[in-house]
Image 1: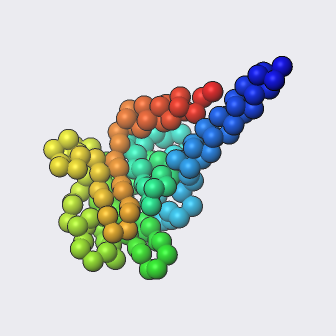
Image 2: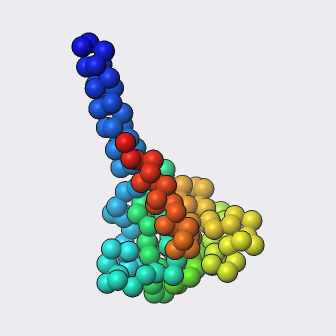
Length: 153
């Protein structure tokens, strides 16, 4: 009886830990704003050509479906700002308040060039701890399936 209760408690703790891990890994895009960005759940059924995954300081936000060209701003504390330019098939760091501007100079990541770039599908702003990752629809579906599989009991 005592061992059974211990296993039940252990299983409950494990489930809570997995839910907390998933919540920490994929967060809603609360700090991401911009009128020209359409999130996947608001596309009205149209599938995007590519997805952008944004990570800020270790927090990864929900994927953004790329449908139109536009810019949005990532604003953090202490006037830390990154401006991201997107098209339906590409992303680049248009501006940043970091000193070295390496992220801006990394250029455009597009579906057609990401295999030829040193950083592949990524643009990284080390001083601001911002990572932009461009994914094809197939890659994003596989990534989300892997996350859901990890979270399954």
